[in-house]
Amino acid sequence: MSDPVESSPLVDLPLDQLVACHECDLLMRKPVLKHDEKAECPRCGYELYAHRHNVVQRSLALVLAALLLYVPANFLPIMQLHLLGQNADDTVWTGVLGLYNSGMAGVAVVVFLCSMAIPLLKLLCQLAVLLTIRLNVGRSYGLLLYRIYHHLRDWGMLEVYLMGVLVAIVKLVDLAELSLGLGLLCFISLLLVQVWLEVVMSPHQIWVALSGEDVHAGD
View 1: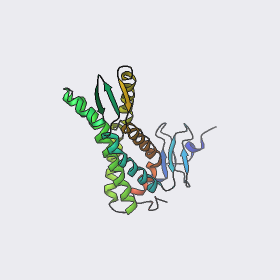
View 2 (view 1 turned 180 degrees about the vertical axis):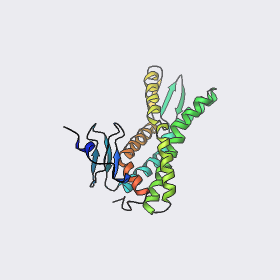
View 3 (view 1 turned 120 degrees about the vertical axis):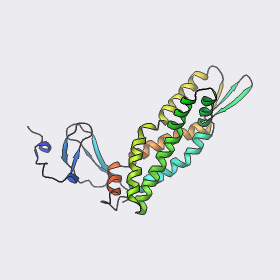
View 4 (view 1 turned 45 degrees about the vertical axis):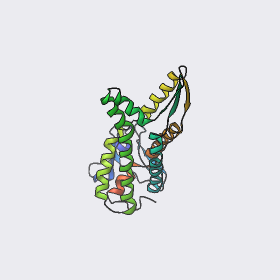
């Protein structure tokens, strides 16, 4: 039995009524979604896009929460090391400085970019994009910033840095007295908020809103 989606006459439809699956490249008619519904590929089950409720307002709240967590996550102590009567407070920033002062400038630059600079730049791009939609101004700049954000997505590696911190804690726990700092809680919270933001900030709705087709993207 043939697939009804594939056998339908799609050639004559305009491009804005078509959607292609990112996983299996199946071309199909774009379904119209209601609030809190999502479209899935009939061939492989991949989520094509979703229509979430109050996407702009919820995303703005999460972006602001992430920005508030950014400073304590990077500059408050992640862990406190007590060894031979000496105490040391380790933060993300002191880790970057330690690598640089140890002669590993290249590694320090990579850690700084992936754990501090690019995550902050991503959040600022998201904030600017959401504000252009919310205030209905400068959407052409919003389109540019959203493209930049998508290019940066693969370079913000907070989860990799967190795994490195957890490995270091496991290895050092038998060598010295360790106590976890507030910075670690803020760092984990920042990571979770960013993951939540990726889920809430529906790319399809953002692209449509930026293109001016949906002025009610925040509904």
